[in-house]
Image 1 (tube, helix red, strand yellow):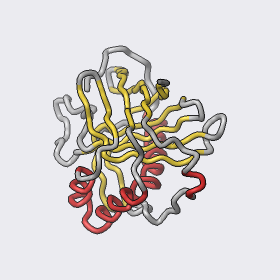
Image 2: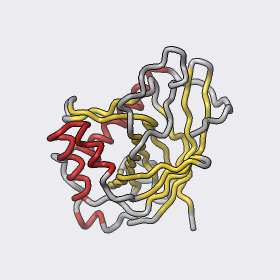
Image 3: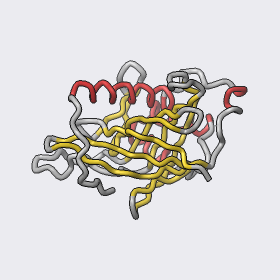
Length: 217
């Protein structure tokens, strides 16, 4: 994935860390915390089943300023509760070494396209979100089966890329398909933390999905 050289300004480190922590909590609740209640079937019927596409503008800050990029997330269909439970159980019983092959063996449910590069989405889950400005929105989480981009990986003293083999995006959209979110472009998941699982982002700072827009057909 190529990041353009367009400067978009700076954000404080503390604010970005808080945003990342909120994103991780949502990911934990939807992706791997099987103990949390599933949205009622009556509510699920109101949510789109797919296919649908989202155009996303992303921003990532660095010591030299900020860079911007654009990509498209195309969801063919959303993962079922059964498919979610398979991943949750794999992580709980075997940790990341069991979770990764379980994810890669999951059905293909979409693709993330950045320029000429495509990344397979093996997990896409949604639930109703009451925090959007107009209400009636959705929280959507997608997980690719390989990393999209190693933010900071080109630095002289960059840490090892080993083990960061997925990417996790979380965003909220309102009823017309507009919203924002955050993304770990290269990540790994592991047991631990209050929810029983942690998302470990390769980047020191989160990538902001500053603009998310559903594409109309």
